[in-house]
Length: 181
Image 1: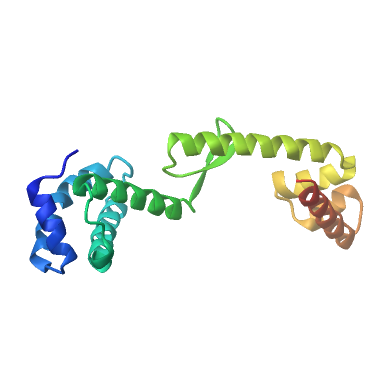
Image 2 (image 1 turned 30 degrees about the horizontal axis):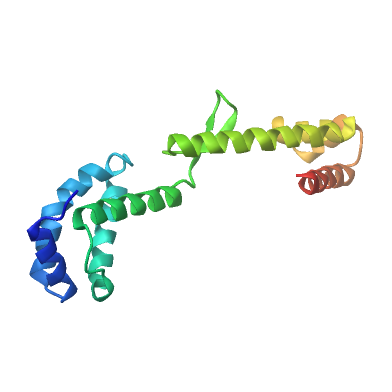
């Protein structure tokens, strides 16, 4: 991508603090950047926020901007980076992927999903190995608590131990598994 004469002129004017030049650059690229941004996220709010952040940063840090920059390329690259940051921030929402039985973030890229899958498989493997080192009673207690979602009282009844012993047993199992993982 090459700089157009207009881009170069506008960039130089923005560096000097020219607001109309800034508005013109925004008008030229805002719609194109939105279309580009929507390739990385389906959420138009995230896309628009990322673009606005790009232009806000340009204006905010205009005095420190480089003289020789490919404006169009710069705008696309920074927009992409902002969207990826915003996607990472919004990936706090998880859903269960039943095909692989692991948790993945919503709207993760293919590479992120693959890395998450490999990390989860590795962690599951370590967990399975660590679980084998527990006693049968410890494994049953964890199974009832986390797979069956049973209350401590019911687990204690099933295992024929006191409720306090049940709590302590599960706590110690988790502590041991954390140590091994």
